[in-house]
Image 1 (cartoon, rainbow, N blue to C red):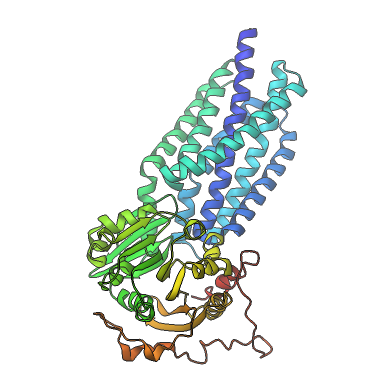
Image 2 (spheres, one colour; image 1 turned 45 degrees about the vertical axis):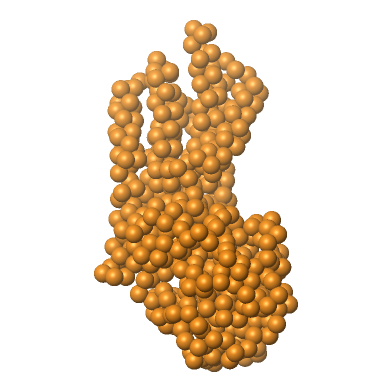
Length: 516
């Protein structure tokens, strides 16, 4: 009898650690889902963590009412966590695809509160059960809480370094749900002599297991069909890398690349974007020996750069090796980028652009900054005065920089804030914008140490869109897209510089795009 009680008490401590691991994984998973689908990572992680902890507090309070059938209560709480948590990611993507805007946020926050509440009920029950077995309340509480806190650390590390990169968000949820279910079934077995109708409880657990296993096997395929509803054209490539979701679509001759749902290029009109991004800067730079590209992992910027025979070396810095791999293997992208990343003059570095500039001691004649829009904190740092100061410090005299800077029409204040931030480093700027049908009107900021005379620039390589005669027209902005932005009182708004300490661009970006 004593040996059985010892086994039971030991498993209770193990169970507390395991459910804690599962709880923290669900907590950070919900934050990741919110960040990916709803945007603004800090906001979503703050809300989901706050709601989860609030739910735990409510659950701990409600646990006082669970005075009978402790084990059975724990088993069915685990069943609910397994079922609701396991299907959480799957249903979140379904809500995004099939229901109106805002329903996905309501769903996510509700699920977070519910799972937090169920998690809050678990630990007090385990502590009381350990005490029932014969462990003193002080000892049982200390041991269960130790298992809980240690499990929290393990859960966070597992999610960041193993589960999300290897399984993605959908399979991770189903797998963690299965772990919760396994804990319940082991408790059901170990304490079977204390339970009535254990066969019925086992059958219910078995049904939930079948549902979760089916989700683990088929859930991601079904989510792909949900994703398809978010895109106009058929998806021909879908993957979730360590850093982002990568989607390629194809409709007739139009190949489109999306990263985390944001359009990166359309083969129909990408030349308008990439030629303006590259050739004015190359026309200005006195030498083309060393060129740096930050972003541009699809290889299209490099394709344009390789038109210049005097380039010695192109260094491309892109965080995600999966994008580089796709650009080097996908036949549609290879046709678009003309196998540019495989050229002997190209060196690819998979690293954060900010970190690369901090660590590198190299200087460049031309720097092209082709990074995603500043819609979260990690991207915002690549649009700050500190970042552009690093860019300036790697620019050789007589060289130039070109930065993609969102739309002066759809995100007017964002565009001119970026321009103002670049200028705050002491660089002289010139502003360009061009109509790209798949994107709309898109803006660029060119910068150098000396004033830029657009009329002196000449496009001397083969292009499909850009001409020397067209260049000056791209610097002309209409009244509803120029830098003269008025506040509600009709006074000209003073645009602040975007910095690491004051990352104001994120809120401006979110507010600018809410109607588009």
